[in-house]
Length: 388
Image 1 (cartoon, rainbow, N blue to C red):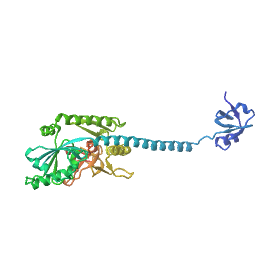
Image 2 (image 1 turned 120 degrees about the horizontal axis):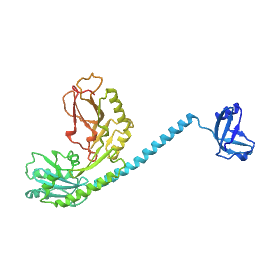
Image 3 (image 1 turned 180 degrees about the vertical axis):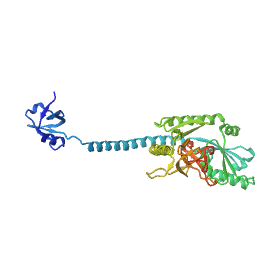
Image 4 (image 1 turned 135 degrees about the vertical axis):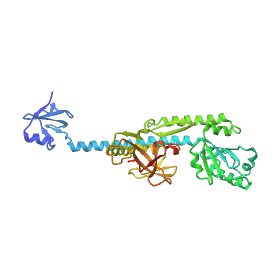
């Protein structure tokens, strides 16, 4: 049964404005705290919740105004966003740490050709085994100037860079032809980053079949393949545990190596879109900035550290300008309606190109684990023929 209290207009207005919270009642036994009570004035009725019951009156709870309700909602949203960021950051760091621990155990095959050809087994950028592929060149390896306590099979061996430079110097001392410099071959693209720190060296990307064919005379191929397979499966399994897997990025084993790419959600062709629609679409890319930052952090890809829009991304410590590129296939730049507009979340590739020619790399083509890309994926834009 509703508890209805009839009051005059003056009291009704005061209660409505939260200026009258203590109301006298005849029989307090009818009222309990947290009960609803209804106030009637003429044909108007409003309800309030009872905060407390006294000996001869009741105390009403204040009713939140619209402004207070809005402020409370905003506060709740802010707290939710902050908590969500903290939780996601913890989860992302856990995934990143687990991935990095696994990547330390990755074993790569590296073949170095100077004049002697040498096969290295490399783990965490450190040599764990060395074998010469030319039997008559083994004296180059045997005469290397390294510490007496150092052996190639020591898991805490020397860095790949140092040993390749030593081999190069020793080959020169022994009179071998080193005029063509050093060629470092591997199926693992991350080795290319190491090669950049070696003088007179070029990287040669080879497939696993060629890699195995070259070392088959000095190594148990089945053992190497099994090691690679076990590592790939463990790494892929760890990546698939991530809550964002198949949402913002996806991974697969390609050419006997785990490769991960950002999902194609940001690389869409917008048919029959005008310039304004395309601009709005670009804004939505920046609205997803938090998700994109999480992806970069997860794969330990560096970017400008301020809280504003991302304008620089670093792949293996090389800086790339980050932008959204909008390209139309129409030659008529004054046409209000664009026939086809493609929006790319891209990196600018700086090269010596003619004026008006621009080179962009869609970020979805960057391999996230090794932070490398194929030159074939770079988009060349002729500014004189395209509208943006």
